[in-house]
Image (cartoon, rainbow, N blue to C red):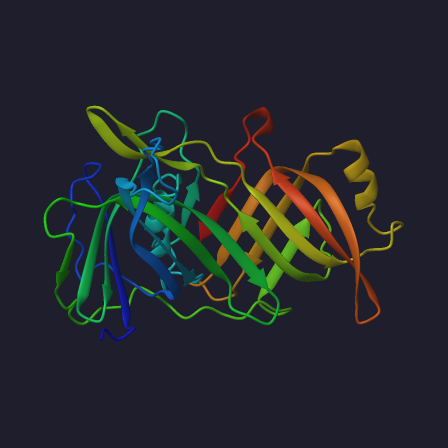
Length: 312
């Protein structure tokens, strides 16, 4: 029997697919809702004509490692220091953060043609270690009133040839990099859409990063391609005389969007997009209050950054 005690270590690779050897002392991730497959794979079906009914054996092919977990959104504790989760976002297509000492760390999606970042990740269940290299992924974000905000990651990587599965305890993980977040609420969180601050129930985003296993003769890797950042805001519907989002939807307007969370320097998260489209509005009832679920598309129209994070 193996106890369900999950520890995840992840470290940025210097060269794609070359094990960066993450350690418990420097690279532990404070996760929640961890899930994984020890091996994910395709099956080759032979589809032979036989003289009997029944299934034929398939052949394993294109094996890989997939996993997922969530991390809480909080600052690094000191303004001008990049939070630990920014390194994970790099492996999901974002550029390394631009750090201004004592002030902030700013992160946007990397431009096409820029060398892609990847992770080596060791997952431990009790003393059972599973290794993956060349790991890249996508992410979601969730800011829901009355809860802590978090990022959800999904990963795909290669299974190394040397000791991919073995018995090895992780040691004592140092989680000092991971600070406690603050609740999403009236005091800690500000949300703006086209210059107006609606009453917000939740904002959830999906980076939509494309990841696919490329299994070729002479080359095998996980390809991270384009992304399409979208989000959903659930708000109390404003009076159209106060803010006419219906007109913005009908015209396809491009509007500014932002969220700021936290009030203490070193634990402030900001995100913004210059040109967002409202693409759908669905109405619902909550406590006899008209609610809108608004679908948002974060665009790069005119060369704008579709999503910018600032930790300060």
